[in-house]
Every structure is written in C-alpha cells, then in structure tokens.
Length: 590
Ligand SMILES: Nc1nc2c(ncn2[C@@H]2O[C@H](COP(=O)(O)O[C@H]3[C@@H](O)[C@H](n4cnc5c(=O)[nH]c(N)nc54)O[C@@H]3COP(=O)(O)O)[C@@H](O)[C@H]2O)c(=O)[nH]1
Image (cartoon, rainbow, N blue to C red; front, side, top):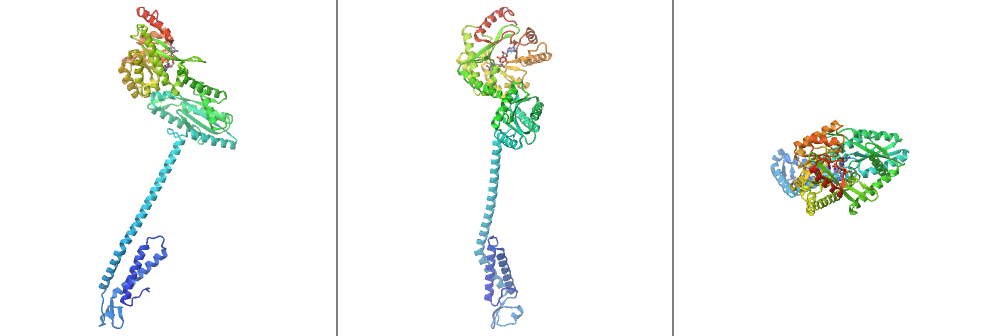
C-alpha cells in the first residue's frame, strides 16, 4: 500500500512536487558520508513510492466530475461521465516533464557542480595523498640513502669508520655480558699502490671490491668487516675464546688474499699485512683498539708483509716515531736539510759520460744521511713530494748552471731528474719546469725526466699530453724501473719517450740468471724496435757491463762506475770523462 494518495488534481501536483523534492534531496545526499544510510534508504523508498503513485494515476488519467471534483479515474468510468474534463495522460506527462526540466535546470547545475566539485575534491585529495605518500617515501628513501652513505663505504658497501667504531662498542657490551673477548684485525693490502699506479684506479677499485667480498666470506656472518681507508680493512671478530682462534681467522684471511685477482685480463697476486688488538688487554674502547691494531699492522708490514702481528706496547712508540718523522720531513725543506747526489751514466761503447742522475738525500740532524727510500714513501703519502720535487729540480738546474759557468763541456750530457706520480699529476708541472729552466738559463737539452713505468701506466693518456709538451721543448723522457710495471705495449708505442731504463733487479743476477738475461735481451730488443735508447741500471760487475754492451744496450749506470756522489765530487768525473774520450777504459771502466 502506498503512503501517498491522489484524491484531487491538486494533491496530484503536490505529489509531483513532493516526489521531485524527495528526488532532489536524495540526489544531494547520495554521496554525503555524514548522512546516515537509514536516511538515504528512507528517502529513496519515499521517492519510489511517490513515483509509483504518480504513475498509477497517470496510467488512468484525471477527470473532473461535478459531484466529486477532480479525481483520478479509470478511462472507462471517465468516458461514461458527461461533465468530466479529461486531462489525458500525455498532458499530465508533458506538464510533469516540464516541471521536472524546470526544476532540474534550477537544481541540476548546482547538483552536478557540487558533485563534480566533490569528485574533483576527492580526486585532488587522493592525488595529494598519493603525492604526499610518494614524497614521504622519497624522503624516507633519501634519508635512508644518506644514513647508509654516512655509515658505509660507497665502493664496497662495507661499514665505514663511524659505523665500525659503533659496532666495536656494541661488541664490547656483548663481550662484557658473555664474559668473552673480541679481536680487532687491521688488514692492509700489500703493494696495492703499485696496482693503482700501473693499472689505474678502475683496476684498483675492482681489486678492493674483490678483497671486500673475500674478507666477508672468510669471517662469520655476525662478525663485522669494514673499509676505513684506501686499502685498509678492519674485521671485528666477536666471541673469541682464545688467541689460537684469532690466528686461525687471520691465517684464513692471509690465504684468501694470496689467491689471484683477475682484473682487466691481468692475473694479479697480492698479499696483506694484519695487525691484531684484543679487548680488554690492548684497550677497552673502540678508538684505542683500532689504533693499536693499526700499530700492529705497521709492525707486520715492516716484518716483511704477508704476516700477522699481535699488538705489544712498544708498537705505540713506533707510530709516534712515524708521526714525528713526518713533521720533521715537513720542516726539512725550510731548514735546508736536503742534498742532491749525482750518479754518472756512461755510453757503453765509447765510454763517454752522457748523463748524471740526480738522487736526493736527507741530512737528518739526528739520524745522519738518509737514503730516499727512507723518506720518499712518506713524502708521497703526505703530499710533500711536490715541494720536495720542486726543490730537486731547482737544485739540479742551479748545479747545471754552475757547471756550465765553470766551463765544463756539457754538450752531450743531461741531468736526469726523477718525477713522482703526484708531480706528474700536478696541473702546472710543465710550466713550472720550463720556468725553472728559464730562471737558471739552462737549455732544455741538458735536462732529462725519469718517470717510473708504474707512474706512466697509471694514466697513460694524460701522461702522454704532459710528456709531449716536454718533448716539444726538447726535454728528453726516460722510463725508469722498466720491467717492474704492467706496460701496455700499444701505449708504449704511442708515448712520447726517448729511453727505457732496465730495472736493476734484472741486471743484478746477470750472468747467473738465465731468465734475467732473457728479460734484459727482450727489453733491449723492444727498445730497438721502438727506436728508443736503453740504459742498464745497477751495473756492478764487468760481466754485467759486457753482457749489456754485447746485447746492444746503449748506456750503463751503476756502482761499477760510481756510486751517487755529491755535486763537488762529480766535477772530477767530468775531467775523467775528458780523459776517457781520448783513452776509453782507463779512467772509466767501460
Ligand atoms: N721522486 C723522486 N725519487 C727519487 C729521488 N731521488 C731518488 N729517488 C728514488 O729513490 C729510489 C732510491 O734511490 P737511491 O737510494 O738514490 O738509489 C739509487 C742508486 O743509489 C741505486 N743504484 C745505482 N746503481 C746501483 C748499483 O749498482 N747497485 C745498487 N744496489 N744500487 C744502485 O739505484 C737508485 C737509482 O735508481 P733509479 O732511480 O731507478 O735509477 C730510486 O728509485 C730513486 O728513483 C727524487 O729526487 N725524487
């Protein structure tokens, strides 16, 4: 039964209006969350009920009778009444539709706009929400990335120094609770610099990544492996029962590092030195444990590398000494404590003096005269090699100027100056060298620069640019220690160089060592084919000199002729050189 009744046409129109009102109301609240579902159901039922009543009445039409007035009625009954006025269903319908259109025109835009606005708002909101979520996620990712960066080494992904110290601290807490000890292993790769210098940083990086993986595989999963510097790694071994357990782990690490590293078609062999400190006997905080493991590692290096050393208290003194030495090296330049020695080089077939190599010494106030091997590595490490190298160049040019002013015949003679890799990488090297030559009025032909094979191969392309500049000015270039690096023959062919110096390690065992003789022969043949001159270094015996001369080596340098000597003593060799020119073999044993 319907809730609505149509008794008169007025009630019909009221019902139409009511239905429309209910409909509009329903449409408005349909999407509003705050309106209860019960209200929405009630309105939709009312609307449907009103609609049904309307249609029922429409189906029959409406008539007017004199007695009853306006009434909805059956079409049959309607036709039998003479005073009735029939309003056909169609008219009803048209009026209803018009009213509906009028109302919809008034309400619909508002409704549509409102719904559209609501939808837009909802869409906007959801876009904003998802954008905010994305932004928040990106922020979280960035924060996580920075947190990771702040605590990890970018190359190997291992914890860095900051995280390492934290991990050691955590392990200390655990060790205290479990009444166990822990060990800090400071691991430094032996001669890693050579790989970096000769094959370049990309190859060096690959070796470091491979070393990191090997270290991680060697220790337990809950032990920490960290990289804290260039080729320096630290392993924290927890729950250590005794020293034997540490020796076992350290031995495994030594063994893992001895396996070949296959990098860029090279099979590289390396080793490492390990220093160990133990909690609590060698320190009870992370910094001290790390410092003492480092000191022990230095001892392992000086003991010949590829070995393990446990920390002892005297090692701290060694580290302190090293730091003091570095600060003394810094002031040595200002205090004019360096001296240049010169070692002559002779033409092996004529016996003529053709060059001298300038070799630095440090006149240390307490330790006496120090050889370059005792301080050049530290100078390279600290960057002091650049000002020291500059000093060597100026001092050598000053000496040349003095010799020239003294009337010595230097026409066919050059002073050889060693350049380190750091100097070669220095932006203004060529300008600096040329300026110094100008300052002392020294012809470029009297200067030759020696660069080790490793340094050249570190970055052959940029080295070639610098060397070409020197060559254009008339300065000759020699590759030092040839045979010890990893020269690429294709690069060698293209590099602007004049000489190869056979490393003395291949000369010292001639004629006993067949393989060394083969290597020396091969270097001489290579130099010939590239149209380069060859120098035999470290010639100590007549037999070595004879072998090199017979094989076609051009120049000899070594103790057989002279040890490196101070500037003033060198003058005598020039006089002897004059003698040797007229009677080769007497003054100089060639
Ligand atoms: N960057 C710079 N490096 C320099 C400079 N001065 C020297 N050096 C490098 O130090 C290394 C060692 O030099 P030194 O102790 O002077 O040794 C030289 C010679 O004394 C030694 N030599 C020469 N002949 C013989 C020999 O017959 N037997 C023997 N046992 N040793 C000998 O060789 C060194 C010269 O070698 P090289 O330079 O390879 O020609 C050395 O690598 C120097 O390069 C500097 O100013 N800057």
